[in-house]
Amino acid sequence: MLVFNVTFKCRPGMRDTFLEQIMSAGIIDGARGEAGNLRYDYSVPVDHADELFLVEKYRDAGAVAEHVRQTHTAKLVELKEQYVSDMILEQYEAPEASL
Image (cartoon, rainbow, N blue to C red; front, side, top):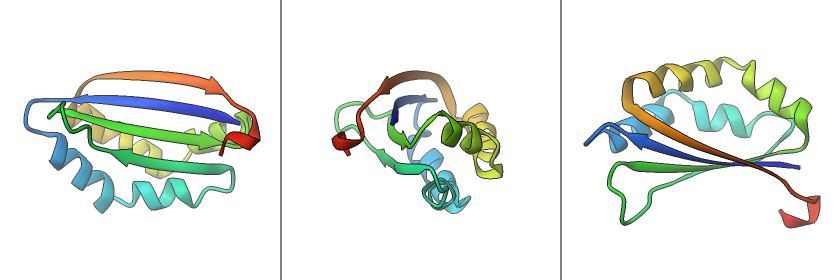
């Protein structure tokens, strides 16, 4: 299983709008509906007003490759260009039992 922790550092005052756009564009439902997706969850840090955190879990590298090819992923890339000033991506391999 592959796990990604993504921290989006949004432009000042844009985090909530970014999250609203993600939700209204169907990105969350699209990602969660992928066959190899095990988790796709956003959260809002209480002490960082311009950050948004995402945890993604995929069955394997093939599932990640399929995720990257989806139209909802392309839409997220577009939204990031508009609302995000920086992004930190951490990738881990984890055993299936750590779901």
